[in-house]
Image 1 (cartoon, helix red, strand yellow):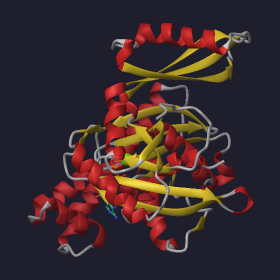
Image 2 (cartoon, helix red, strand yellow; image 1 turned 180 degrees about the vertical axis):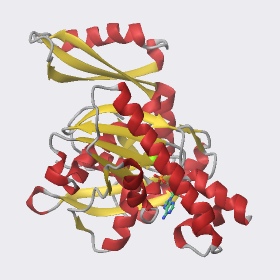
Image 3 (cartoon, rainbow, N blue to C red; image 1 turned 135 degrees about the vertical axis):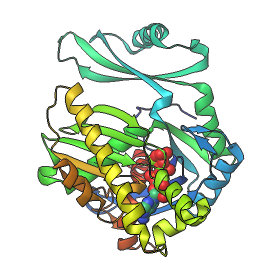
Image 4 (cartoon, protein in one colour; image 1 turned 90 degrees about the vertical axis):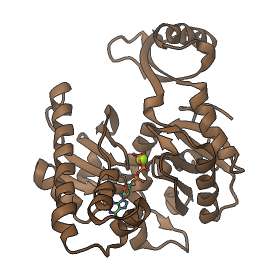
Length: 356
Ligand SMILES: Nc1ncnc2c1ncn2[C@@H]1O[C@H](COP(=O)(O)OP(=O)(O)OP(=O)(O)O)[C@@H](O)[C@H]1O
Ligand SMILES: [Mg+2]
């Protein structure tokens, strides 16, 4: 297994997002005219509390979900790209002389890492990428260093390997979201060029915020607010189990009071949370506005959520569909993909690592 956030090597891989509520897989291949083809995708729910704050607590339950997702995917490919949650990764940008040799750079990276990583170096894996000539000094290059605890990596690898799969790439979820954003950008006016776009991924436990400016990530943050709160409210109100609430949420069948008394208040607090994220961003960075909001994650499947967020924030809002320009495998239905796509951003970004 390679721990690499950055290498460009491209074996075919399945993108596997191991997240709070589910294991999500996406398999891409190259389609016509250099575009991507969506060969397949699958979602298998993860037992409650098996993943907490991005950490695998119930290894067996998670690997069962990986096994099921792979079976549902119906692929022969066993090589996978996984992601660590960004909270498990420390990154730092440093300056190094532009003419430094690769070997010397490795030594330098270790020395830099030693200074800012709060764990013994033998407990972490480190990777780095040269980003190009520094804007502030032409004789130097910006180098991005990323480090993660080995045990966090090993837990994820174990979940995949116990399910009979092979891990060839270990990425970071925010980088995968950024990769998939490049497919979503074409949904925006002028493909988001020279614009500031806030991606809001509403997961089960977390709201993951990633702001892109002219195609580059400029800001990453997480807020503890997730769609799981709606599930809990449904359970409480209507006396349902978590599983029943989850099904009712997606398929309907709840009492008439649900819409006005449970769903709408949740939609309002979600919109407020997005407005708050916008305000944090504009008040703590050089950017004073956001041109578009892209909604992703399972929460983006709530009907008309884009309208509610746009009303509240007064910012043009769209629901992400990283597959919108792709040709689809024969078993995949257009309508269903549009519903499932927002929650598949990370898995899609990971699967992109496997296609030239
Ligand atoms: N149609 C729908 N209506 C309302 N909520 C939905 C719908 N579809 C999915 N969800 C909710 O979205 C959440 C799952 O979203 P997602 O798959 O993005 O989470 P996750 O990636 O597992 O979580 P996290 O990113 O926090 O680790 C669940 O809470 C689920 O109930
Ligand atoms: Mg997620």
